[in-house]
Length: 430
Ligand SMILES: Nc1ncnc2c1ncn2[C@@H]1O[C@H](COP(=O)(O)OP(=O)(O)O)[C@@H](O)[C@H]1O
Ligand SMILES: [Mg+2]
Image (cartoon, rainbow, N blue to C red; front, side):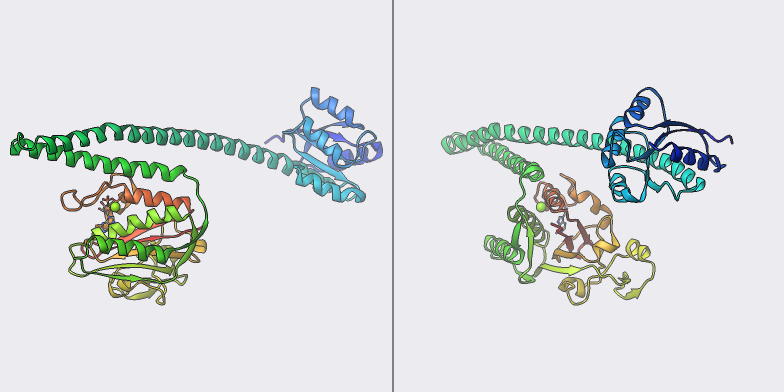
């Protein structure tokens, strides 16, 4: 293949040095070049304005410009051209500064051979090209991100105002139904009363959905305030309230004490309420339900638990994750997990280095559970695995929890089996 001719602009005030550099380059058979020489900065700038070059070889000490200023002026004139700084011993420090500001390389003009000079030129051109391509890609990506963010915001604003505007007519429907039932009770037949009651129930459900949707959209953009939050105390309060609402239920609570995290108190309250409400709701068919809140750490040994609950040592970590998932360290593993034979799955996009150091919080119950094949859907709004006739709900809770965890730069994932309970794990990285 015929070597491409590289057009070089050499900016060098000393004609002797300029001659030497040109001579050295001629000795490098790998480079075919055409060299234009400028002795002053103003000449170099004038040449850059009217001619195309592939690379600039730049001496920083010129009669009309000194040090870094020379580099800055040339870079301003030709921001897309690779610049290799040629230094004398005196200006090496400045040359390094020039590299920090975007010069591709710096060479001692006395020591450089034809080969090193030629190599530096070729690499500088390649590097600059790659940098420019990267810059273009990241600009495109940034633009796409901005567009997506704007679209998301629009969608959120839309669903917020729709939900908001739906509330008013619903309130009127509810009020009219109540008035009809209260004031005309005697005149209404039994069937009509039932119909009105049905309208009321439906509009109540719609109110619930709207409220949940409003919470969901608020989670995305509400200001986040980071402080120290006592998670265990929060769980204690929520579970007490649940028990008070249904005192007839027989529920054993296992709450790891004194868990404290950094996060947004109000958002974490909503997340825990949702997870604990679910644990409470989906374990209600158990004679003795067990609700657990705890903390564990993903084991950084290659230890996994197989379907029969035996521990195995695997050397291949990807095999470990994909086949079975990781187990908690025995010290901190939850009560139900120790008793049951379920494995501990890895979080989504498992990053071995980072995630094995993470503390993982979990909410677990021994209720109806679900089929893990369908688990992916659960964090999408309106996706429910249980029928509304059996378990009431809007299907927006877990989507809300996921948003809250993501706003804390954390991950959320689950593990469950039909009739063997469910565990929701999450991390918080703020
Ligand atoms: N602890 C749990 N046990 C069993 N299934 C659960 C549990 N938590 C959530 N689910 C399943 O995930 C679905 C989505 O949960 P969520 O978004 O909170 O909606 P909702 O509770 O209103 O149905 C639920 O409908 C249910 O099928
Ligand atoms: Mg729920």
